[in-house]
Length: 118
Image (cartoon, rainbow, N blue to C red; front, side):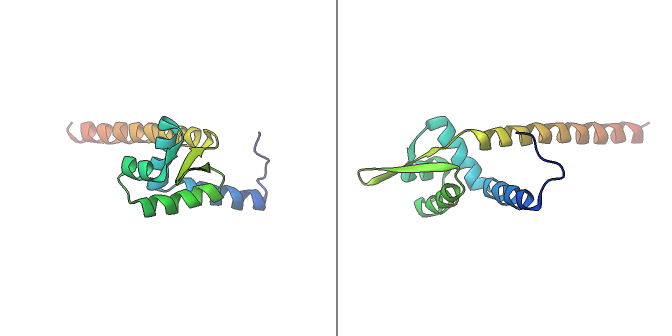
């Protein structure tokens, strides 16, 4: 889908809200674990990300409301899974942008250091 230009106000607000859902360290870890392990229980997720089950459950609720994860009951356990890999594609793009930024900073400071030593 191409982004409409100018970006409509409603879409701006929806994008900002969805990106805020994805921009929490605990949620990034949860999404990573779910991508690597597949469907996982709250207790197993909590252990994998070194958080309490309560805190993990709170973050999963936010991800569920945003449509990032789905859940199902299996006996007494509640299992969560990703709805798709879209958040991971966003993280990959952001990581690539960060790598470029850090590389430019390194070159800039490296150049400044070399210039100062001449």
